[in-house]
Image: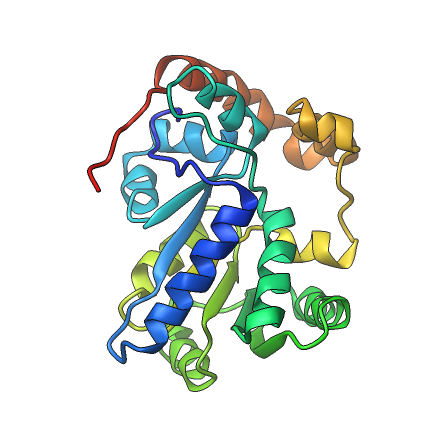
Length: 249
């Protein structure tokens, strides 16, 4: 989809895959986490423009359709994506499944205040959810060994990484061999949506693929150039580099 191999999964299917992968990983002491990245217009455009970014992004084990435009484009193929799996929604799907089945989360990224508040909201919303560790996202590469050791000590099943683009993808790829978990999921500014600091677009705008416009109106100074540059390119790529890819089972 737009040049990126994107999983044909619903939100429920993605959550069930997370559960199965994490349970399987528990029985393998030498496990490395699966890298789970989110495809949207921004990522699609960057992958086409920046070879290093594309190489990093393609290290993902699972790329899911974070943007509605990716879902629309997939409908031109024989294997359409069932629905959008926006990370801002999926963190709630994942939390519900984790609380039901005893999966453990580590929450990495954002400011100390946003991180702590997101953890509080998730624990309050999903009773029984085990968030075994958390850490803000302000650190240098020279601290990553220590941070990975800290994460591993908590024995998480899922590590959420919210460090912005492209830092979170680079962190995930760089540390895949160091971390012991089932999934390593990049989640951008997701914690700010969990806390309510960032507002979601109305449902009709999400369904029409216009959530980007809602965000642009809310934060024009920060997002204008991003969308002005990436949206036209992403649309072109979605129209010209989308096709079905059959994988042998």
